[in-house]
Length: 89
Picture (cartoon, one colour):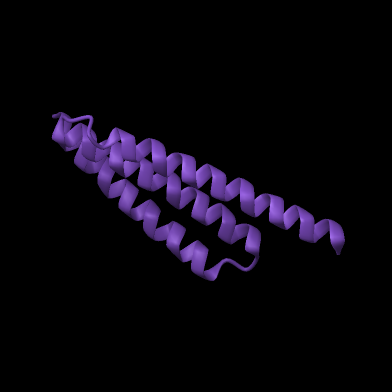
């Protein structure tokens, strides 16, 4: 039963990743692209957690922490850059 739920969650994550990629490519503004890449990073984190649950190992949890940290720092860096360019305008 647990593997069925994990596989279902993986299907939902794949659909979410596809929608985030569409928004990142087609986003009319830079803010949409930043939000899409942040959502994509969170989906990748969720995917690694699901793989870790499916394989019943904690080996991927270090990767989860690194990807989550890089996603957060990337979003903060881009937001800081956009704030600086919007203030100067």
